[in-house]
Amino acid sequence: MLYQNNYGGLRDADIDPRQYEIKSLKNVDKGMIFNRLSLDRKPTDRLTTGTALICMMTAEDIAYIDALGNRQSDDSIGFEWNVYFKYMLWCGATWNLQ
Image 1: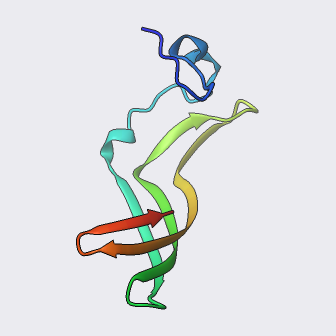
Image 2: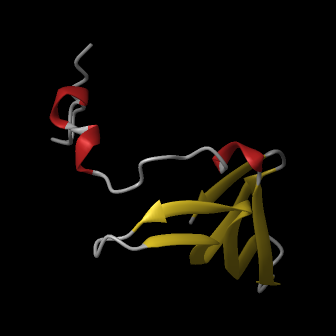
């Protein structure tokens, strides 16, 4: 099945799974851990702003072969930083920007 999106992205036929270095993902289904540290501020009654730092990792180590051919094992995925705004239009309806 081919999928063509409206913004000129990749179709399913354009992706070659043989180009990726990870050969086995047997431990990916063991779970994910998301540690989040956030700070929210409410400057007005209707506006809420905030920022968050998220540390993402798998519950078990994932074994893979790096670009140099060395066998590696790690549970860390990386960090993500978010900034978000939330504005209440009326009761029950909000506009969010993240």
